Image (cartoon, rainbow, N blue to C red; front, side):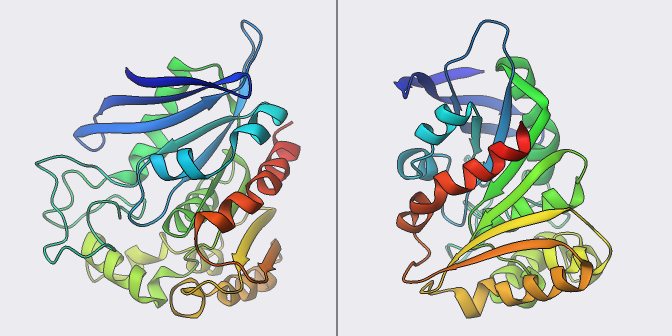
Length: 278
């Protein structure tokens, strides 16, 4: 693993790293914050999955998570949102919601995407082994969170691996991609026309099909420009009510989809994770 940068922050180390990924067959860049800790001490890990158009850098630069992570002694890992490189295909029309920066945390089965767009395997298999090997991580204490497309990833991965993650939360997630334009484009492009394959990458469908976690936390801006067209938290509320999942859905008056919103409530979500990772 190549170290691209390290900086002291709140007594801990904010690093940016690059490594060769077997899952995506590309180099991948990620951000890791490690709080100050004693020699030999292992710390819990919070995974943060970013949204459309983002890289590891968006939350690193604008997420305002380091003070809370230092206080609660949490390692914070933020991977990229897709494979990148000259050999990696992109949306042929140059759209922002598919291809580079829009991996949707699935393993693509359709060409030309299948060779590189294997973000589920990267996030759930390859990257955890890298973090285990390179950082003082207690892999028995993991949680996951994300924003928008990354909120979709956090919910679906959390529901798919319920024994691994002790807490699952999201900011403004795409909760039912099978039913909204962003998700329909991505799932059809990466997975093909079989809607059965789509269901295991759709949080509402997973819950309808029996996936369970004890509780979920979602923060959603009431003035989010994508609220009714792409995000649909009402569908998640209904699914959780039917399944008996304890959903805390905070509708935040006046807030939009941006990192101004995320950074405002980041410390609250991290405190919620910390309480469940102790």
